[in-house]
Amino acid sequence: MSIIQCAACGAIVPHYDTVNTVSEGHGDRLLCTACFNREMAHHTGLDDFGEVKFKPVHLSDANGTVHEFHIRSLLFGDKLSLEAFDSTSEEEPSGYRFQIIGDPLSDQFVLLGKLIEKMRRLLAIAHVRDSDLGLQIVDETVRGRIEWDGFENSRRPCVVIDGRRVEWDELGRMLMPFEGWQFKLEVRDPSDEI
Image 1 (cartoon, rainbow, N blue to C red):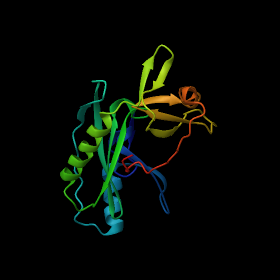
Image 2 (cartoon, rainbow, N blue to C red):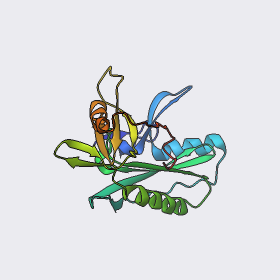
Image 3 (spheres, one colour):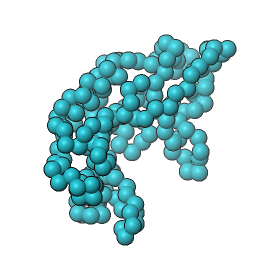
Image 4 (cartoon, rainbow, N blue to C red):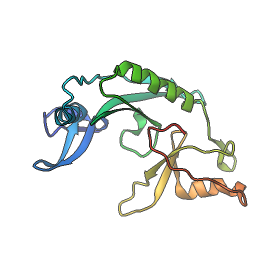
């Protein structure tokens, strides 16, 4: 696990517990989420905002594999984002990631409960499976997340489906059994349930 020092408080924190910020007077800074939330609360006048640190949550996917999810809260003005991500994907564009948006002054444990319900619903669905022919689409619907392929100077995406990184070419190969069929590509915010 990669660790980084917060530019504001000097704390040594895991990479997943940081936010890269840019502001006048400070330039580029990497802040721990606590400092980021404290600065956002100050700028938005949310003096009553209290950050809650959540312990990791363990949930099983549709194949019975247990995943450990780190959860962090990020204050964005009048919105609070609770994000959960698979501990195997701290720096890689792979693994499950979930998000829910709520009121920053609401009970964060209630938001956590809603996030966990969402995670359980989405983890219960398998969109792809391994076969003798490679990865195959289970039904006619595939849900996932668009990511950068990670190669310097590359402008190609990869996707993450069922917590698995799928290269763009492999996604194309998975679609070939549906040659001649129609499709609908709908891009949605990470907090939306699709």
